[in-house]
Amino acid sequence: MKVALIKYNAGNVQSVRYALERLGVDAELTDNPEKIRSADRVIFPGQGEASSAMSYLKERKLDQVIREIKQPFLGVCLGLQLLCTHTEENDTTCLGIFPVKVKRFIPSASGQEKVPHVGWNSLENLVKNPLLKDLPDSKFMYYVHSYFAELGEHTLATTSYIQDFTAILHRDNFWAIQAHPEKSSMLGEKLLENFLALPSSPSPQIY
Image (cartoon, rainbow, N blue to C red):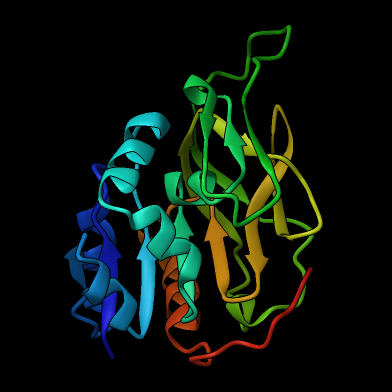
């Protein structure tokens, strides 16, 4: 199986690569459009700043490549946010795969909840979906983020920090997760395993 990790001026990409290696998959980190198009699976991971990441994608015409992808595609953390329509981070227009806006956390009046949201938090309100098949009992994942995707028709699971927000999205052949599966122990490993096992041409499904 050929797995492409999209290179786009973002951090934390190598940790996803190492997580895939533990599953027996040697993924290639690339910004080459043809290698991305020809991969069996495409993963869009990373941490970083939205506007500079979008600039990198546009300079290399990867924004259009991503919109045309037909094989299973997984966005992770910043990758989820960039698949949405717009983020408040530097007022950035994103890829528009999901008709969802990304907003910055506003700390509660008590000041007990800090921004960024860092640490373990649970998945809630899971919708039946092949990405979530046979998850282990403990549904806690590891988060590091200051921005969140709003709830919407494509939300597969939610998490609550300051307020409820989208933890996982799905539309057609695109999935995206806000947490870091590569840092989320058995649950994260199972999610990546399920992603790799998805049919090559998933049936269109709107949740």
